[in-house]
Length: 209
Ligand code: ACO
Image (cartoon, rainbow, N blue to C red; front, side, top):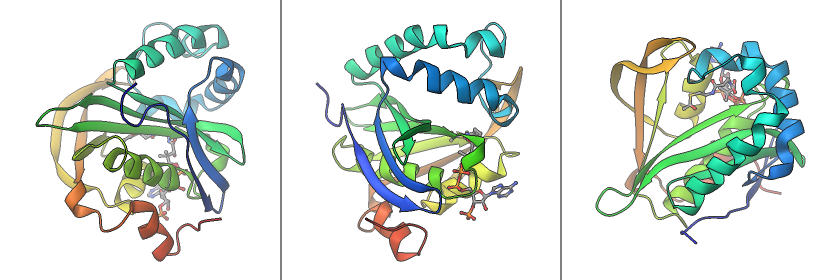
C-alpha cells in the first residue's frame, strides 16, 4: 500500500450537509451515471474530451472499466481517486493524480460536484479535506490544479482553500472538444498554517461536528 491510500476523510459540515470522502467503489456505477447523465450541461464544458458520446462514456456499464483503471493507478501510488459524499450520498468526485515522489513530491487535484448541491460549500470542503490529506498522510510538498479562465466557480473554490495563481498555460488541455488555455494554481505545504479545514472553520465557511 502507498501512504494515504485507501483513505476515508472528514466529516466537515457545510451548508449543503455533512461532507466526507472515501475511495471509489465498484457499486458506485448507478449513482455516478445517474448524476453525470443528468448534469451534462454542468460538467461537460470543464472536462477533458473523451472518445464517444457523453451518453456512452457516462453510461453505468462504463463505470467498471473506469473504476478498474482508477484502482490500478491508486495501487501504483500515482492516484488517490475519491468519491465526495454529502450526508452519505454519492455527490461527486475528488481525484489526486500524477503523484510523483522523490525530490518533487507533487500531484494535481481535480473535482466535480452534482449541480443541485452547487454553491453550498461542498467542493470547498472536499478540496480542504483532500489538501490536508496530501500534505499529511500522503506526504506531498506541492499540489497544483489547472482551471479554465472561464470557470469562475472553480476558481472561487481554489481561492477559498488558499491556492496561488502561477501562470497561464496556453492551449494546455483538450477540454470540451478543443485545446483550452488553463490557469495554473499551486500550493506548497509551507503556505498552510495548521490545516486547510481549520482555516475554513476559522473563516466561518465550515464547521466540525
Ligand atoms: N461566478 C463566480 N463565482 C461563482 C459562480 C460564478 N458564476 N458560481 C459560483 N461561484 C462561487 C460561489 O460564490 C462560491 O464561492 P464563495 O464560497 O467564495 O462564495 C464558489 O463559487 C463555489 O463554492 P462551493 O459551493 O464550495 O463549490 P460547489 O460545491 O458549488 O462546486 C464546482 C463548485 C466543483 C466548480 C462545481 O460547480 C462543478 O462541479 N462544476 C463542474 C465541474 C468543474 O468545473 N470542476 C472543476 C474543474 S477545475 C479543477 O478540477 C481544478
